[in-house]
Length: 239
Image (cartoon, rainbow, N blue to C red; front, side, top):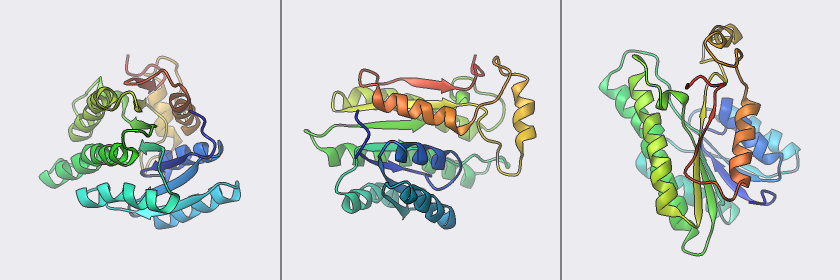
């Protein structure tokens, strides 16, 4: 895929990893539809940074807990830019508190249901003649579940399964892949020392950074003979 001039919708594109992915795409001439939930200030700042590079960017607010808003996000982005060629499902909730029914429903809605319905809306909008690419953000925990963060882990395992299913269902028009990051950014409330502690159990003995995930995204978008794959960017942690 030649990226220059393409239009990408990046969910969770205002802050943290989603922001890094959006900036990487903008650096290759991609026009950005930046989804955000509550981070209006971050979305506006990220959009301004992208515009300063000479590319286009527009923030779009949507509550991904609402299936209607999630599905409608694609139509809004396409109306603004004329089309959408790339979908990056990056938005996710990582709950660290006690699991409740409300938290369970929220994580499954944002982390799994929204990516599916966005992918379906993306495919329908492209039609039978269009072509494009979807990249889902999974997690190394999807294949090595532990005793905690169970709802989150289940949603990411679902993302891995969904990636394979959609790769089959949408071929050959749309390629669908996933990235499974490891220790890339500290959780909210933690600092770099959190990642340093994790590095002790990672085979490469170091943590990564957003640029590592951005590089994987660019590879998957440009690799036209790759679909249905999960690219682990975790220093071997899933092993």
